[in-house]
Image (cartoon, rainbow, N blue to C red):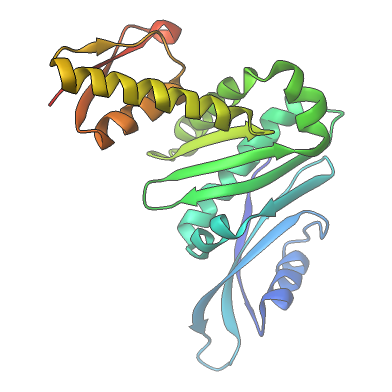
Length: 231
């Protein structure tokens, strides 16, 4: 398992902070490295503290962060959680196809609601995921389970996408959930949905709450269904 490298270093600026971190930890300069200015200055120095994180991987590793995600990463604890999730996801993808380069993009981060969207891009998305798009829900589930079981990271929900497939599937689930809520509010009768994957059930629970309904899961494993009822 690739472990997240993290450390606090003192430096004059963000770029130098990364260089100091790499030298101090004998880290690979080619791996993804992210630094956050904490604002704390030394007692006898004008240098500032930086929290620095690096996601190591044996493969050639690429990652980009869109502006929407970058704003939430200015909190050290949030950044640690996000990059631990990236390590877990990268390991999973590497095991599925060791010979294919892994490239990821952080597309959405809501630290308050503890939601993180990550998109698989490039060669991996095209050659590995595209022929088996339904595997994405399993990858999301495994990432969340490992974070909870191995790292005691609770409450976070990681959604993994590739070429917009998961986003399209999620939009379909939202439509189904909203129609079910409309039915419940109009008739007063509960509505039982067909079996859904964990990531899909999560979306339905959110929609039910937004629509002023209650929801609960029934059944076991992949046969779990959601019952939506009036509050």
